[in-house]
Length: 269
Image (cartoon, rainbow, N blue to C red; front, side, top):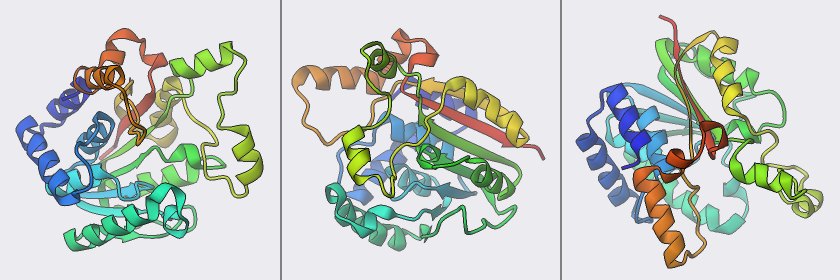
């Protein structure tokens, strides 16, 4: 287990054994993957609220939501699910299959745009948006404010985005390369553009709780790898294994150079 997952579970009072059992059960229920990555386990550790209610904005049919469900969290997803309407990388088949599972499990899905559809006030113990706000083409303030208003007193807001200052972005700039997505793809297929409009830094996440009237519980950066469907050679698999189990990158890199930034903040009672 990634050290950051253990740290979050310990801070939140969730048993490691219970969490491991929930991950195993989630994999059984999903039936379409062999493991749940460290990145997804961090999301599950933050989002899970046994006996409570979770609102997930933009999480689609991610595996961490099943882990949260198994741990006794009532999950509501608010997402436009754009992948459902095209054939991008086989996503529709996977998403439709998972939608049937989520319906069977009682995981509620509201297919709507949170910018246009208000969230019910004071209704959730946790509101999360993992790898979501970087896709907004304008300020995330309206959505984040709505998420805070949807929390009960004492509820938590949890966020994550890619770190725009991560080491590979720094290396790109040194080589004179862009830190944005492929320009030809953006140029030819960017209307509408649903990629990353603005990624964030650790210092920006550290400032967010104050902007939203929240108390920070944990603001941190992690170097856990993104999930990838590309085949890996033996050396790559070995390094990924070290990252997943031991947090190799977190041991070697300063926090401001790691891949993702995360926030766990608390609404005052």
